[in-house]
Length: 224
Length: 212
Image 1 (cartoon, each protein chain N blue to C red):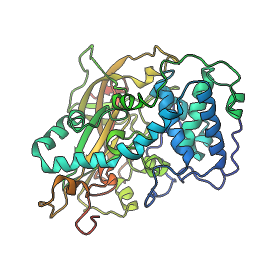
Image 2: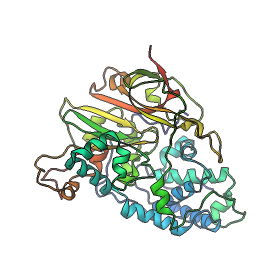
Image 3: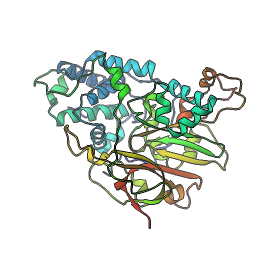
Image 4: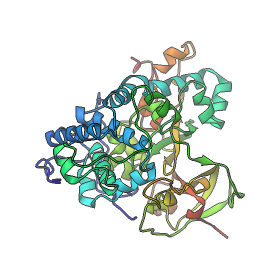
């Protein structure tokens, strides 16, 4: 989706403003929001791509005017409402009015460490040879999917060079196709493709800039 | 569910949040999820404690210091970062597939996630607010030299800026250049010179004058 989350190359946001002595959390609720998002992700009723899709499909004005943990909380509520795990009234009051739905897993204090240390690897065994090789010129396809995609707008239609192959990884665009498990974990070859800044940003751009994205095979076409 | 926050007009998305209505909203949510049995508050406490104490930029600093000190580890890190980093005990969530990229006198690397906030958690912990900000996500891929200037750093004109946009599940760690005059330092002392920003590419390793 060509959403406001796809920010590469947008202008007008001003300078980057690092804080000196930035705290890890700026309020207690931020730490709880982070932990709930991690814990509910581990519950298994959605995957990371569905979570990202929920965040980036918030109304544009809401996305742009929310802090990052606010975006997480809004998306978490949305993911649970969509799955009838909670109701609007329950969210407003904190009181349970409907029976909970079964979830795949509930983390407890003893299982947190192992869950975090394991993570969710996306590398899968390759079932076909890679279409592209390191050094090959490829073009990012000029596609504008309505749904979730990880091909940023600023590279679409531009040609670059494959600099690394990463094996086959679960393809984000298909990983969102089923709202509940079992998810579509179809994997595709993943490549790092580097673009010249001048190709992306025009002749007035800094000629010393090179930018890469990690692109699944179906985002790319050979440059003949 | 009300979406109206009275603070919205005076409160930008990239500023820290102190909204009492968010406090209330998140508390209600935790209460509800606990009652439903979806989360265990003790698990939430443990997750927070982990990122407050165990997992943070000190992990990445140890990786960098070892790479500066041990040529074999340096080679391993640059060829199979996931395995090299795992050998120090750093694995898992948001660092399942790691790539390390080395700065040189000619090339400066910078890592960004233009689409969201992807960041190598096992080695750097949770990302700072500026990393998730619209300003950084927008500017890093177009004007990395300008981003570095926002951090008060200027590199020589001839420097190539190599920006890595983390658009899939590969996570990047910048291996900064080892500062001058550090030959006598051991790994623990070297790690003190490695800042979080140096490992993202919005900073450099600390000189003797800057060292803590």
